[in-house]
Image 1 (cartoon, one colour):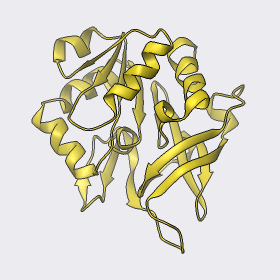
Image 2 (cartoon, helix red, strand yellow; image 1 turned 120 degrees about the vertical axis):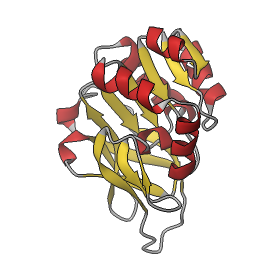
Image 3 (cartoon, one colour; image 1 turned 180 degrees about the vertical axis):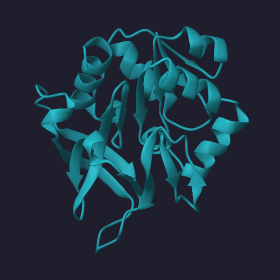
Length: 201
């Protein structure tokens, strides 16, 4: 059972619809008992880093998520803001402490003549040492103005180009997280979700 964390931000319905289509059992919840009883955890999210952490704290989810993911090593997927929140700090709209599961920070994309937010489809390039080696799908949907900057780039699973290489996804132990939205990425996203939750990735 995948626990889709409800903390007041994120495309919960579209994430659940994708998992239902794939036949992956799930529930939308912020209940601690249900989170403890789940086999996997999915943290979606759209919005600011500050608001995301504020909502997690208000629903008393920080400790339970850290216990289940970091201590108990449950399979975890973070999407967009859900990926950013697992870093130590984010700057949206001002410096805010994150969950701290991955060392690094989340900074605003430098303009460089680019349109911000980065919105739409973009190809990613996989780091072949970090899994998903047999995936032929590499085109995913993005919408974000901030990007992750890990201290140790060995956790980077993929990159995409937007005025230079930026982190598309990360993978470390039981943690996998994407800046892009698998649930909005049509066939590419469905393949990724199926591979992660039904495979051995």
